[in-house]
Image (cartoon, rainbow, N blue to C red; front, side, top):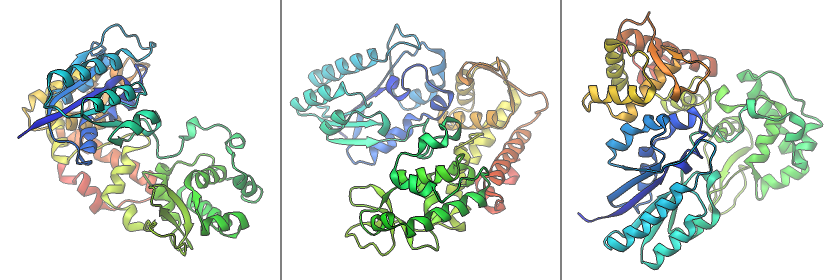
Length: 433
C-alpha cells in the first residue's frame, strides 16, 4: 500500500481564532472533516497528519482524545492570547508543507484544512513541485483565490452556523432586514405575525408562496431563472420575525421550503451549477433537478429527528444508544466530580478501553450536560472552562439514560407538536433506561 497523502489541519482557522464559542468547540469533529475529504476520491493512504494550534490552551483538551485516535500529530504554536490574530499556525503549517515536499518526494497529495488566503501561494508552490492540493474550509471563511488554485476544494459545515438563516437572537429589527425590492412590495400586503407556533409559521409561508405566484415580477422569475432562496428567506423573516426552521421541525431552511411547497405549483429546483432556487414546477430548464416535496414521513424520520435535536436549544447530538449506555453506566459508577470536560472525555474513553470512541464519548457527555444532569461551576464561564459534577439525585446509568430520553422527547414534542414512539425508540430505546 502506497502512503502518499499529507493532511494538515489549521485548528486556529477551524476555531476562527481563540475567542471561540462552546458550540464551535463542542461540535467540531476532525473525523467528520476527514470523511468529507474522503468522498472526493482524492484521499489515499495517509502518511502524515498534523494539527496546528496553541495546545497549551486548556479548553482544547476536549479535542485530545480525537486527535490521538486519528493518529494526528499535534503541533504546538506558542505565544497566543485569545485576542491575538491567528497567523502563527499558518506560517508553521506552510513551512512544514514545503519541508515535507522536499524531503518526502513520494508524498504527492497535500490536504490543507483551512480557508486562509495565504495558502494560495503555498498551493502554487506545491504545484511547482508536482503535488496535488486539496483545500477544505467553511464556505463563509474560504478565500476565493486559495479555492481557485486548489485541484479540489471541499466545503464543510460550520459548527457554529445556524440553518441558512440568522438566529432570531442575532436578528436586527425587521425594517432594516428588507433589502430587496420584491420583499418591499410583499411587505405592503403580507403582514408580520408575532407568533412562531408551528401551524402559524407554515400557514404564513404558504401565504408568501401564493403572493409570489401572483406578483407579476416574481411570477416571471419563477418561470425563468428562479428566485434565490435568500430572497424567499427574507420574505419569510419579514412575515415571521422570529422565524427559525429548527423551531418548526426542520434542520435546514431548504427542507422547510420543500415542505411548504407541497400541494402548490412551486418547487425547490437545483440548477446545474449547484445553486438552489424556488421555481415553478413547470419550469423546463435543461438539467435542473426538482427536489422532492417533504411531508409527514420526512418530518417523523430518524434523520429529521436527529437534525432537530442537533440544532437549537438544548443541543442533543446523540451517538449510538449502545455508546450512551456504556458512558452513562461508567459516569454513574465513578460519579464525576469537579472535572472539566476535556479530562472527563479522556477519562471515560480510557476507562472503557476502546469500546466507545472519543467522539462518541464527547457527544454522550455533552448530551448529559444538555439534559441538566451535571452541576456546572462557575456558572458564568464557558462550558470548556467549567467544572462538572454529577447531580446528587442521579444514582445509576439507567437514571442518566431516562433523563436524557425525557429531554429528547420534550424537545421533539415542543418542536414538532407530536412524536412517533417507534422513531424515538430507534434513537434511544425505552429499554435503554
